[in-house]
Amino acid sequence: MAKTTQLAGKTAIVCGGSKGIGLSTAAEIVRRGGSVGVVARGNGSLELAGERLRALVHESSQFVDMIQADAANRDDVGPKLEAFMEARGVPDYLINAVGYAGPDYVSNLVLDDFRQQMDVNYYGQLIPTLVVLPHLLEAGRGHIAFVSSMLGYFGIIGYAAYAPSKFALVGLAEVLRHELRPSGLSVSVLYPPDTDTPGFEVENISKPVETHQLSANVKVAQPDEVARQFLDGIMRGKFHILPSGAGMVWRLQRYAPRLVRAILDQALSKARRRVGKT
Image (cartoon, rainbow, N blue to C red; front, side, top):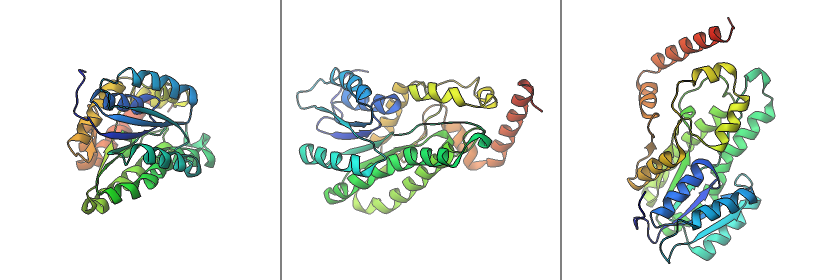
């Protein structure tokens, strides 16, 4: 994409911005002339992300700050976000892209699996929001965006621990959209389909064989394209942001849920037969 000044003078905090959709979103912000503070746990991935992002800077006013912190740990991320805002000012955007999927048969999951995915996927996006929100309210402006999933509005085999955490984000976003609107703040939630990210590669390792069958013919999205559509939606003030491949399923689930369940059930039966299960 050509360099632009659409976001000149704007700042975004991107949590979970060292890899995948988060990194691509941070890169898209920088391409459009904005500045970013990127939050992630891994120092190695942060350094690599910082190199990529700084290479995209094209205005002297832009900056790229890398913040090593665990977004799901308020004692860790809270002071570091406060220090960033003290130095750089209240951000215009808070992009919450923290998350991972650890799929498996529900019979193989233990309580800690559910807790861990809720901690990362839900609290990892809630905690930065709680830290930054008072500053946005005081400023009377700002946009908060969450990254859910297509599995934030329907469920399939293998995602008993993951889908509830993504549903929870949607519930949080719905409440914040309503409650914060009079304060001048806006909210978005992204529902990406399967996307070609490092996390998706790890996800495929433990994915049940039936789940592999169900998604075998599904086109995997590219993170840069998802990020472009994500940012376009944010700039237009959209609440639900549905990248290519997610919109039709969202509408079917909303208006014809019984049909979606029937299609999924039939697909699961076929998948089980293909892998020799009855």
